[in-house]
Length: 448
Image (cartoon, rainbow, N blue to C red; front, side):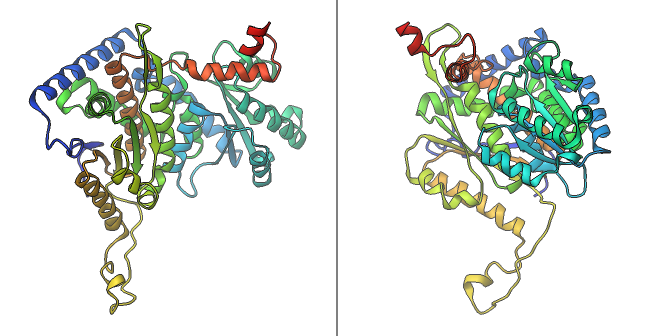
């Protein structure tokens, strides 16, 4: 299934219940999309949205490449310690793009405080041949920092106080914060978390690029794909602009048909973690109580991460016959790296012989197409994002695609996609429960 485009968006089944767009409604939607893109263009010119400039941040890319090359010569495993945006992007890149025999192995920890998960890591990984990459902009997030403090203690026990300092990389704020203070005191090597790019938009900064480079992933190709998608977004009209169409069609479904659940369903096992990355991006960015004027709106599209063809047998029944509240987006890979053919083991049994001679690539494409047609038959909208293959350029482009679509959706809904007050409230309550100085539970403040 060869393609010329880095990413193509087939949205022909996004309105299966309407058999095409209504003229006035479509013109109105295109107008709103154009206004949203114009606003984002102004923000780019003003430099007020950091992730728009990711392709130009060459100094950060070179720093990540240089440090990765240095530690890959000496160590076997990079233990990535992070949560949310400091974890999910690197996981997605590693799962999709890591190749056997290239680069370091990556191990991920710090997204939870489950002691059994930590124990399992310590059984699997030799700390003497490992580097800890603690990722936290502030150093105040309890899950990764508590895990880091424990692993640091174990690392010192394994290699000694002096030597351990060469086996810790802190990715953090350039100037301030708890982790910056620790890194300065210990003499750890550091990489900067960009001050103007929030965690869920940071996968293509040092946060994700350094682990990816350690794993042998060509990070320049990630950035090249991101640049291609970004430049097309700011140069194409609304009706040809794929991230904008993705946002606009989801906005239309949300406000006109109350379809407020967004399912992302890649038909490739290597993109399974990509779905988890998208889930955080879409949920934290769009789930907002207030609009920009302070009006209570309770906006949000709930993201669901699925996997084709696996979840044809666990979720599609709900999507086909359940509530009409979902929009499904498939991710389809044109060509896979490996080729297998189903053997004709039982030529006299129709239940197996019909599949004989077909490649597994043919089968997975047929499964995706059949699922889309079944949804359409039941009046359920779906779209398909197509990439030629799972390459660094394509994955970098996909990440920028969804970030741009999220930013555009924020403009259409008139909300701030870059804050997360709902997350901060939970952090404050947790600090109070654990006795951090200066924090009290709301119930204690009211009774006091």
